Each structure stands twice: as structure tokens, then as C-alpha cells.
Length: 68
Image (cartoon, rainbow, N blue to C red; front, side, top):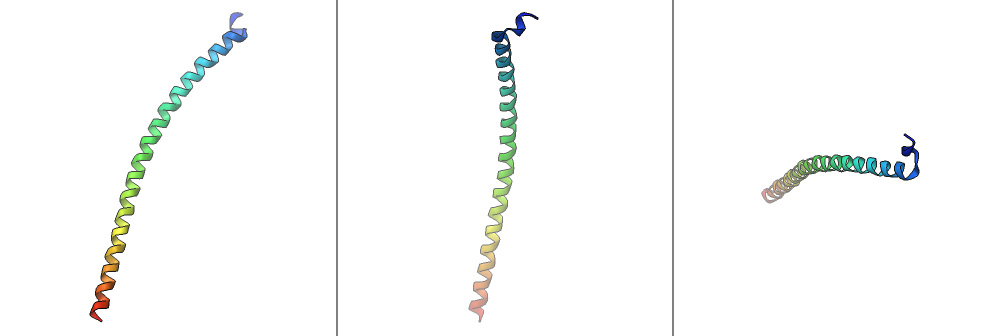
């Protein structure tokens, strides 16, 4: 126990702990990135559909004008 109190040993232990924490955080970040990518894909698809609907509406309006 006496050795653990010396500054060099405690610093080394802290570094080891920090490395483990960093690894855990990296794994968490990777998981979050995957989740975000999936969410983004869904959002992009929805946006494309909305754009198509607007185009269809415009075509209908043009046809009505021609009938007049």
C-alpha cells in the first residue's frame, strides 16, 4: 500500500484507468454513430418522398390551367 501512494505509481494507475475509459467511450461513440446513420437514412427517404409529392401537385395545377 505504501508504494501506491508514490506519485509515479498513482500517475501510472490513472493513465491505465483513462485508457480503459477511452476505449469504452470509443465503443459507445461507434454505437451512437451507427444509430445516427440509421436515423439519417430514414429522414432522407422521407424528405425525398415529400419532394415528389410537391412535384405531382404542381403537375396537376398545370393541367387545370390548360383545361381553362
